[in-house]
Length: 333
Ligand code: MTE
Image 1: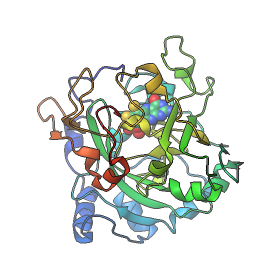
Image 2: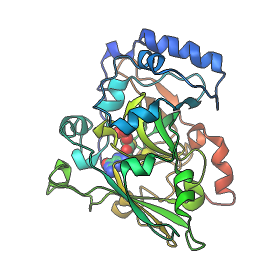
Image 3: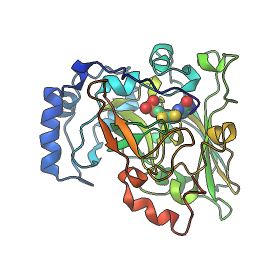
């Protein structure tokens, strides 16, 4: 992005030490044996697992949905969860400012209620929904995914949400629908970054997927993380999570989802097309023009413990490779 990577992590050394809850969670995951395991965890066990997570007051519908959530339906092997503090204090959310600490600082007062989501374009059933109506038909599930930013840092985050495909099926895409376009809220009163005369972004923040990418079972609409409602700085109340793509595809605070026949012009592609493409698949073999993508800094990291690990093709989600058969991923970066 058009941003600087700090040479020193913002995480403190003390945060690197796994907590007791985290250790017991690791044992639990080990016993579950990796990917695609399913479990129903009672609310109290869950609260213990994510002890110390400070969350905003959740709406009643969210708390109700939690009781029937499927826990750990997707887990990426035996990788440590990023501590909640890092995931919520080291953010990219330009609507709240350009620096990593800005979103946590400036989004603290942001209220994500009431919230309306519009679904329109090439669908048989367009509509405008309150967030509750929008989420009501779906069972929440926890997906623990790697998040790899194009800036070469990464995290492992337990999201709560539902597959985007379930939502799209309800809207019934027409035969003309080939892409899905997503739009973030524009509200300069509440989003300080949108008031800034220095911002390079032409609001709203826009993202897009090919329809088959949007329908892939890994693609998630998230309404929570760490067993709680999404914090504002992470994209409350509704964000996209596409774990095999660079983090900028995972658009936050969505108000509109449009099915289109033409490929949407996305925010970063419009700003710097030679640096950020429409596809943005995590790819260690295609460098950013200004830095290598072969490795990443897994947070938390520090000067003395940088925690550099190799980046994997599709961020390790090999099951999506078939979506790109025959496509030159150097050209379609
Ligand atoms: N969505 C909006 N609306 N605005 C943004 O600035 N930043 C993107 C993405 N979604 C961004 C956004 C980028 S660059 C990344 S890496 C991820 O959000 C970061 O998500 P996180 O802050 O929850 O880690």
